Image (cartoon, one colour):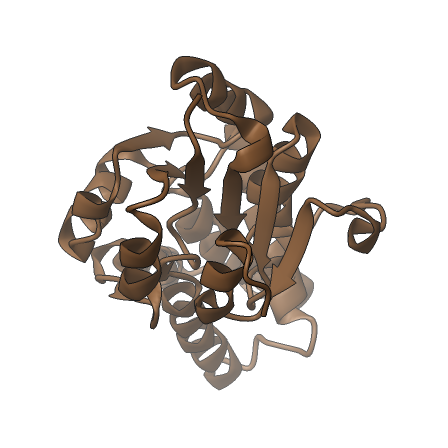
Length: 238
């Protein structure tokens, strides 16, 4: 049996959410200058974005750009203003630009992977557009730490189970590490894996409505940064 640690990529090992937040702030700024924004604009954009993800069945690249356009069109309708297609195109392109930006490695990621590698097989399981994720993984220079990597359209419990079965992973001695309760932690807990939830800022989609009381589950560990993960996984406490 294999002792393994299955890592998420975005906002677990590299900063991704900050790229989207910068684009959102640019969008809000332009909307305010046009006197189209109000205090609910962040929530409206979020609803469109999540609806697009659900409709596409995963993190398709066009979900966020489309949500920016939809939010602009929504506020035009609210204020009885005609939609300017050039302006709508500008906002949509603002969303597409996020995929051109490179991610930065989160502090402590390399040290953690180096520490775990002698004792565990390391797996990378990430979701999203395949070409985008592969490019970012390769440019991060983290790929050499991992024994295997898998990129899926939408991460589900079946993807974790596939790893367990394919690589004969001993779930009682293995771990899942990620920032998303929806796609990293809850599926892993259901399968009996130990989990480390990196409790960092991320968008609402990563938080399902009903998670139960995770603090009562001894397989669940909550940390604020990667530096706490090593001691937990190696069984030394924090």
